[in-house]
Length: 292
Image (tube, rainbow, N blue to C red; front, side, top):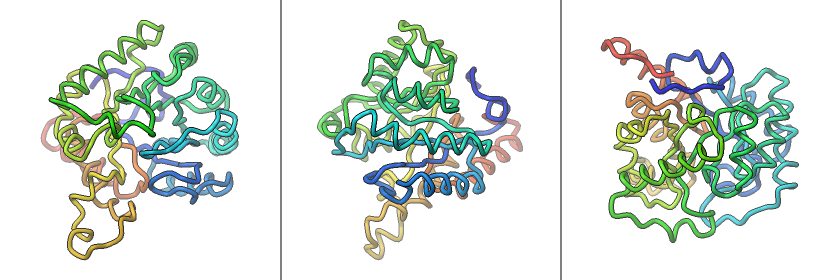
């Protein structure tokens, strides 16, 4: 298991793939935009996801769906900080989903224990300094550009090799800026500057991503490429409601955990919480080592 330092003890001591529950405090996220936009609704959602088995709650205030436009940092902070403070008071482990160093810093001050940046530190040059000084784990996602342009950047000759090389370059930039490499988690960025074929190829290559020497977070939840594996949608022509992909999401959670992923990031927790435990039991029974 690749070493990750800086996590609070309850998370650091897990002997299996962890489950990160998503809380989008936004009016326009692709999967559930608007449902958890008020502070009270978002906190209730966090309590529910924790009860379902979430190990960590990922709170974000800016949509990164394809085509989304940016909001200003004051509005982003206004949305998420009260939610983080209340969840932390309840004893919940919280990460912050942001690309802005100032928002990350404020969230850490409010009690967040991890920063999840879909740009991997490239959208804001202050991010590396913030996470380096705070000495917290940092999720580095593969990133080629903001949501309004990322679909035009989905061009690869060999997606696994190119994503691996670009993630390695992002890690190098962060380490050069003072971030301890042992605090970094890698995320291949399913759906970000990737079409369905790219995402499937990456998902089938978790072992190659692990060869980069860092823990890997898998964020396939409700992504469009999973529609190709949803039986109800294919047979009955069901609506494109992303929640119909929750079953497929749980399947990817099981496969990711079995492959050695450090964590999975999901919108609905219960099935994935069971899936990672099944993978851990199966691995232990086969004489392997569980991944925490």
